Image (cartoon, rainbow, N blue to C red; front, side, top):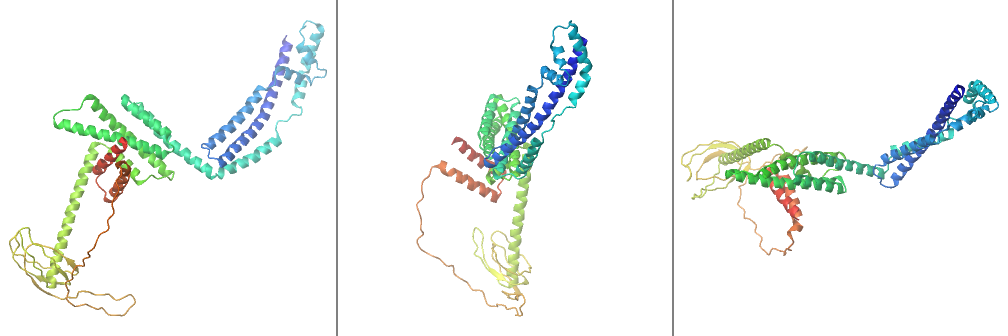
Length: 486
């Protein structure tokens, strides 16, 4: 019957309104439970170290809210409940009678259906105007208080929460290294390379922190670099003999270069991330990572760097030799100006002489050359100071000058005059001490126990001496090979 269908349409509207009202109330309750769950997680994280506690709090709150929404849909109003709800606003409750009756041909039933249809609009308006509770004041008040408490917990983290954040950041660094390995594994690699990368990934996952994972990465990179060096030496030896490496060895060499380059970049990125976290690495590990990154560059760049380093070394040597010659000439000129000379004994290996002088003046001297050079020479020089010099040959010189050996300037704020010591220089004798030297007998220790201290001592000395990269890499590879065998 058309009238009944239109009555059921009105009941569907009632059902929709009732469902919305229930959903609104459950949303308010869900918001309360969500904030409460987040506060509980954050409070627990202040007592214990809980990594990813913010994600846990967000997840718990989201689950609580969704659970209340789901509960609203599960317990939504049914058709029969909506029917009885609307029937309560009919004068004589005839709506339930006509819609549940099966005898539609009965004149009494038809009369009741017509009457119910005429009353449906007034009944629906009375239903909408009924007293209903859409908002829950107490629930919203509790939610507001818990929200303030939640904000305080987030603004002022505890020491355990800061430690948990550090753990999260370190895990992110380790995860980044693993993702780099995953991307590299997608390339066409041999089974051996895939196996090595998989073993490295397993070690990274088992690492307690990011620094330990980085050490495993650097250790593997050094092992691969040592293998690469061996293959390059083998290639150079084969080239000198007019031969070449096998196809598998050539492919392995190219593969090792790519792997070393990728691992060096990953190690450098991890080092930068750890430094940003305020966890710098020790000097030895930093130097190893820097050397690995530098060695991963192209051979052309490496050759240019070596050529430039050689030129700089030669220029430094020439500059040092020029300084030595200039110092020797200045010493000879000072000796000539002071009016004193020294003679040396001539021999097959040249002659040596020592002399001390101080003062200022000018002079000229002529003399025959030594055993290595013959000729006459004239020299003029002005200088002051005290020094020692050595030369070859014998000669005599004359000059004029004063012997102001020492001058002491006046003190700040004083009025005393300068005093000069005009006495002659005397010859002293060295002081020798004789006696027994205490010695202790050393202990014999296995090489594996002391190789670590040797390595640390070497790395510290290389930092001070600034040895060439090739020499550093050679010794570093030596210690790496020992550690890998142990």
